[in-house]
Amino acid sequence: MTDDDPPRERRPVKGLLVIISAPSGGGKDSVIERLCERLDDAVVYVTATSRAPRPGEVHGKHYFFYSPQKFREEIEEGNFLEWSMVHGEFKGVRRDAVAETLEKHRIVIVKPDPQGMRKLKVVLPEAVTIFVQSPSLESLRRRLVARGTETPEALELRMKNAEIEMAAAPEYDHVVVNSDGKLDETVKQVAEIVRKEAERPRTYWL
Figure 1: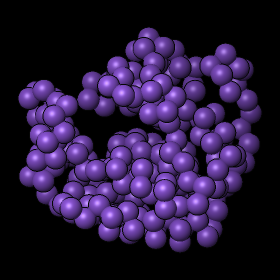
Figure 2 (figure 1 turned 30 degrees about the vertical axis):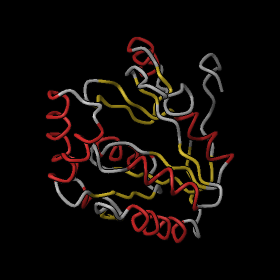
Figure 3 (figure 1 turned 180 degrees about the horizontal axis):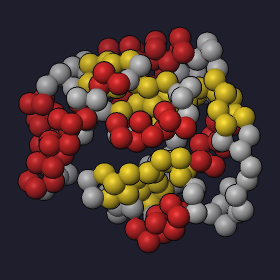
Figure 4 (figure 1 turned 45 degrees about the vertical axis):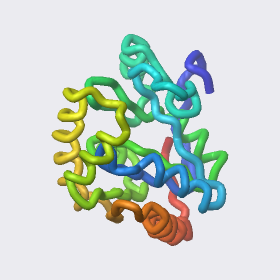
């Protein structure tokens, strides 16, 4: 579906929608990348964002990059299942894109922050939620510093948000600790959870 297509009526869509969240620097993207290699017919839903692409990021692959004005227009037209302001930029999950991805694949992974997870669970209560927890805030800070993509001000903002995000872990169906140097073990645990949950496909109205 393109941005110019007319809205469609909601209909039942089957599959497994997996919501995976983690604090900034928690290793979420690395976990999800390896998870898709381990699982049969699992893909990552491409989130929309109003921030500018980072070096190497491709529109439609890593994110759908919208201008802030375009994002506001999409919100006003009701095209998002959820949207929020994260680190000063819009992020959101399009209803039509989720439906189309579930129709093509058995397992679809969405990676919102906790506030996005809460909004998605309201409209898609059958979705499975997993929180990839960091062993500590100190560990998170080391990872973010090593990544080298944040200004000192942005780093402090992410650390402040990370503390709030980590407090939301009990709201998730499953919590997996991503210990330093244990990425393979983390991916194994998450894959086992998803495989078990996939034995019972859900139905979503999208």
